[in-house]
Image (spheres, rainbow, N blue to C red):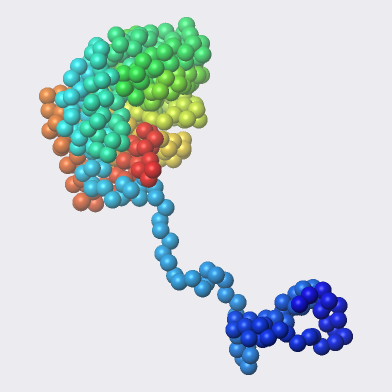
Length: 415
């Protein structure tokens, strides 16, 4: 039928008899046909009730008609890590020390899931890159490995023979502009990356103007860019950006600042300047680095007067409250070496210190190279897993720490 001709006379005459086909259609009621016709005329169609003698049924959306189904949780690194064993999670938070001349010595630790290796030495072998490539092939799931070293400049350089040398930070801060610092650091970082070293425990952004070499009584001296907070802030960001431009992850250190420390924590108990002073002098360079996108920060082993009596690396006040909370840092938090005499003087063994560091908010722990690397690594992992079992360390905190280790390497377990 032609709807327009019907519409023109719908109010004047009765509608024409419907074709037999429409009358016999099983799925098209008379009410539905009328609704079609009226809709063609622009009139409001009456709502047909499925029960002519009863009230109209309430309308239901498709969602209400569909059967109830549980919405699957979105895949994240955290949901994936929740399925890992406590031992594997613990291993991911450990950086294992090794001589750069024999990196294969830690193959078993890497195969067990260690999150990183820390290179020691003063002269890297020419084939370091190929050796590290072989080592990385043992990582479970081929998730990558943090290969780190201390390549600061001056007297703190592990592989200058392979990647080029940088002067002491004090020289850079005095004689180079931030642009020059970034340019020269990028050259070194590019070669580090080519040698499969992807993390540098630098820059030092402690504010310390003492014109002396670092020593047993002074951890900084020439390792610091300057005694000026503003100079250190600018130089530190430039150095950090230089590393990143060369493909190396920077680790800004030593939070909350070692400038003016009473002693070198490697050799015994040490204190920073009072917290009230650090907030004005020592913290701004870290704030600048965080604002510039610092991916990782190392926390010192010094006690911070005004923030408790534990070394900073074992202090929830320093890490969780100040660094994470007030400064808003969301990246990887690494401890300084837990083999330091300041740690044992505080009553902690390396394994117990590792647990306390994780409880305080750190994500990765480090210790020194010695003759017992394998047993020390195992002892740390066991202490962490036992702490989770005994509820001394929340499993959620361990998962969070492991997540930060993966995040700094841009590993996505869901891809």
